[in-house]
Length: 255
Image (cartoon, rainbow, N blue to C red; front, side, top):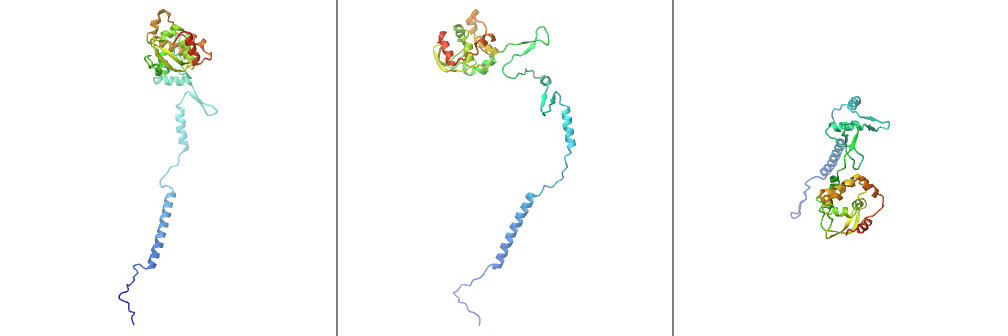
């Protein structure tokens, strides 16, 4: 006799068979494995294309051809290149640049001797303006007016320093100046750095520029004699400090 169901009891039905669900899970897992394997194969595969092996002899021939055009140097046993400086200077001159090469510092420019002897050269005096611009203008300004309350003026004051003692300004350049000073009624209390790294010609040149650029030399009249390197050299090696120079300033009557 057929089984009867209570009309009030809900009938349970499976939408998807459990075996189908298991099969889908297995197929999905296998698909993921296949995808991972394909990615790994693509990542490790060698790039496809046509390649031509490099001919080392062709490369060597190009290097030798380039080397043949280079002159003015030789390769030492250690593998370094030794440059012919005269050849290098000639190349620089051919390209429109004519500058003296020095190892460092300031050097006079060589010019032909007035009598026309190409072997004889005479030094041209060092220019003081470029040195002043590079070493002094930041504080004392290009006009020599200084900065009120911070850095004293040189214009219309340098002649007073020269009159007090001709050695004073070279000493300031060589050893600096530290401590309070008074210039034209204004007090300055700072530090003037020393410039012993400048050679004697350079120091003489910058001092002459300071005296001549703003008419201080005219105020001195016949008493003015431009500085020379021979005025600077004897003042070196005294081991003075900036405060020592300040004391010397007091001794020569400068406030």
